[in-house]
Length: 235
Image 1: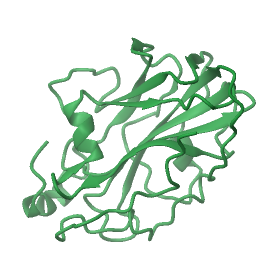
Image 2 (image 1 turned 120 degrees about the horizontal axis):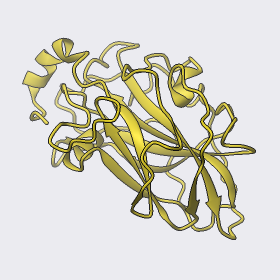
Image 3 (image 1 turned 180 degrees about the vertical axis):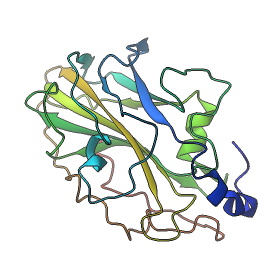
C-alpha cells in the first residue's frame, strides 16, 4: 500500500472508487472453505449509511445454504479481495488509500441459514491504527493477502452464528457520510461445551455517523484512533 502521508489525503478524492473490495472467503483452523458459507455482496461498493439495515451484512445479500463448522477455541480467517474470486496475493486486498480499521463480529442466531442479522453482535477481533508505525488494520490485510485471523472464544456456547467481517475506509471521512463500510457475513455452526452468551450491540445502532472513529480526518497529524463499536469480547 502507498505510504500514509499528506499526499494520500490529496489523493483521497480521486481514489474513491479504486480500492473497493469484498470479504469473500473463510478459513477454519487453516482449512480453506472458500466462499461456500459467505453471503457475498452483489458488488464491491461500500455501504455509507450507518442507519441502513445494509450495515448488518451489506447491500443485497441473502442467506446461502451451506454452513461452515468451527469448534470453540478454534480459529477463523476472513479473506478480502478487490474483485469476486480474485485471490491473487500480488494485488492489494483493499487499495486506493482506503485506510481504516478491521473488525470481526459474531451474532448467535437460531438459524444461520436464514437469520437477517437483526440480533445482537459482539466483537471478537479488531485492529485500528498504530501511531508508532502509522499502520492501519487495512495495511495488515494488504500485507497478508487479504487475511485476518481470529480465535473463537473457547467458552462460547455452541450453536449457529453469523460472523461479520468489516473494514472501514476513512480516506474521505472528514465529513459526515464519508466513511465507507465493507462487510460480509459468514454462516457458521460453533461446536463445543461452552456456556457463554455475550451481550452485544445492534446494527444499525452500534455506530453513529459522527462517532470519533467514523467522522475523522486521518490526514491531520493523527496521534490516536478510537475503533468504532464495542470492546472485544474474549470470553
